[in-house]
Image 1: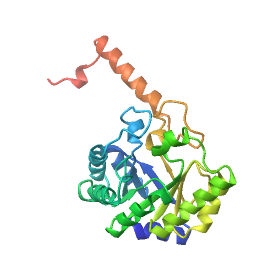
Image 2: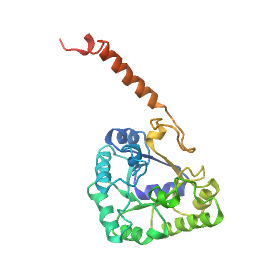
Image 3: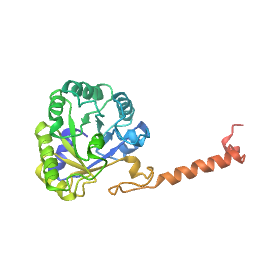
Length: 263
């Protein structure tokens, strides 16, 4: 899967699928299932590292996870999140750090949060030959500025700003835009306005594609979950039960048994 092929999918009316992955094992499973885009999200801060926000995630941590994910990916387009303060300070920082994802991490593209405020950095990254995916709506890296993970674009002024930011991102040269936590009607309006694909997460059915955090999809994440999450499996309870049965077998002298022992 390549950037031009992702763009062609919109033109052909074919939906785009995208999931997160943070390690080689899960990446290989997702890739073999035929998912179009695998995102190494800075959501690893909350999903893997146990933080309450994505802000503490460092470049070195993102590079590490991108590198191990890349070993499990043969077909999907691998995109890596630019973490907090890896691009905000300057265009030079943005280009250098984005380049690390391709050079050291094995990614094919990077994702950058924000609109007009980071337009110059996005243009600089693209000018360096690095594909960029945009991100509007809820911006997890701006959680303190917005006062939490609240749906964005519910009134006309904020909706207009999100639309304008999406148009600016297309003009800057991004190949797709993630739209997170915005009303379905706004997402439809943006999708119909842009020539590049839109990928929704909590943005309704009218987007050109959809993305979810893999651990949410698999039912591994503790409740409560956001409204937009659909659990396609409920593995948390199965895992917990397996661990409890192991504990009981060891403590009761049932494991290892004859079948698990060398003779």
